[in-house]
Length: 339
Image (cartoon, rainbow, N blue to C red):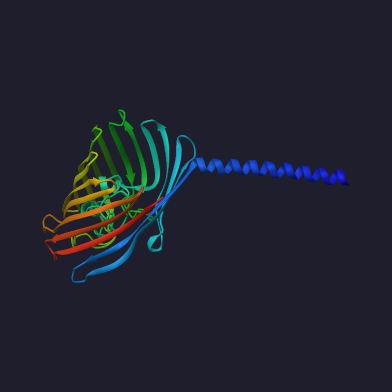
């Protein structure tokens, strides 16, 4: 009996040891192949409009996971826990060649420089210029486009060529936004190209050619009704200058929705005044309907302090010059934590 018990104990010990080794191996593999990250942004906003804003708010609570399945094959997931939760991105990449990778899923629409940037990197608390937010469908300022967070569903090929002197992106996308099926039979063709002639400068160009399906009606373009398909084309041209003391980003954007033409321009500079401390200046112009001269200009001045890597405090003042409405002042503060 003792021999039987001893044999059972030996087998059990070997089983536990093997299970522990297997578990440790799985955990180590997951650590090597899965990267988790995230950030949150919260702050305060005040403006002196007739229906004034005076509120603390949480803008984003973002969680991201990147999985490296094989050397060539990876996947990505991004979720915003704010305002009830929203799936932002989920896609898979496969690299066929050093200069050719394919992507399938839901991801950023490759239009406009700021739309490719993370809100945790953009200097403006409002997260981008009026033109980017309007023409890329980032917020709900374009009622026809809706609030797609600058993302869509589709298929894309991209890569870097000539020792990263040239980068390209070419995609076929629904044109309807995130977390929803396409509402017409048309697809958007989206292109984005970056030329890096020197280490400190980049020149970019992008376009969208397609047909959208109107989410709502808009006073800016009253001829297009809700659920009606309409021609929606976009293009942009921009440049980024990066030096140790100064970063400058400028871009011209234009669009045509049906017969209505719109345009915008922004120039944002980030001056590193001293260690961890930046001065932000920005000029931001948007004309939603050139025939109606429906334009607004924003002048922004602010500061930001990086109190920990990727974590910052921001304070900004904005003067809004609105030709079709009242002018107003806006004061904003924001704290960002990221891991």
